[in-house]
Image 1 (tube, rainbow, N blue to C red):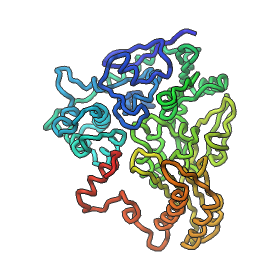
Image 2: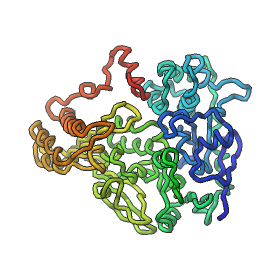
Image 3: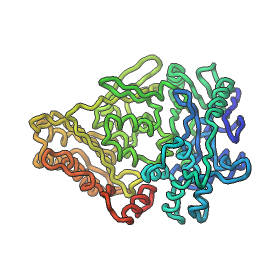
Image 4: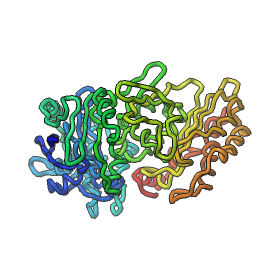
Length: 522
């Protein structure tokens, strides 16, 4: 099999790579092949942010989209037709520091310096994505941008100050990327790309016994998946990447979703929101939050921004982890999956998709094409909650979602209750739902449903929580949902959320919020 060439923009030129394993990571290529050692290796699992780089690609409108991602778990062939930016790119032609770097110096935002390049690249992505004249980002926006970067010696306050100072044009004249030029280069690169395999619609590269397929149309993807049912479907590699960096597994053939425009689309009509399986989590949650703003906290707390930029909603659903945070909300919203094998398309309720621990109803050669969620009904009361040891970038001990259709007379037409972390699969609480169905939405009915959770779940004990703790938390979250949504004096967010601070809170509380949002314990 002929080895194909991977081509992407790097350091102002087209960079070509041949004859490398499809699972070689971007970080390995930078440090070991190119000797570009500004990008650091820390955890090798997408948690610490030392390896943060920025990837640029053309969006559906042909404009440049820049996203911070973790180089340690991104496979090199996924860069084909894109642009890669590392901390070395920020050096100005006259040798001066970029405003992002200079602000870090001015604000004393670095001590040992190991984590600094990753922080700088996360800040640079924010800098470039903040339109000129748009004003300063909020502290919340800064915390979110830095949620994937860990620092253990400087502290986050000076880094947050640097994030504000880098926009101060009185101190640093704005230095902007030539977006129009990069867009033209990417279009030219895609027109002349040599990363072709089996025709223009099914692009791929081979190395040894493994082939990386990167189809560009839904039809080509479906045909490849049907022809290679044993191949691994690769989306954002936020989980699959760890199979290589931590478990040293041979993944065999890979079929990549990231170049298929149909799988990266979001559409809505009067009844339904449809999210393509390859839509990144950040964009998927943004689309869901338009209809369901109650998802805002879960969205912000789902991993870090670089992980949400790379990982996909379809990948999270298909992976089926019992602690995946997307599924409880989707189960409560009665989501439906669009499944495809070759030209055959079928739909399946998400509640029927999981058949056992990391097992699902996919047939050989079949894949998740899209996720469909009904638009909200006027009477729907919806809540999601995540309980974990850290506020940001942590695995849930329990994740819960509640969708309640309350009639005008105060009774429940339906109740959908779903949990993650409570069973071998993300699961609806059938007995608790039955206890509420047709009942009044009041304290007595809620207590009955809370008691029924012990029938629905027998949670296990592990390093994150004991089974008894999980069951108690699951009960309490249902009670909290009632407190927030009851007709008589519902409680405000600041009364039930330890991370919601009222106006006028002291500086310590604000610093605690900043540190918690950046992944540290206040």
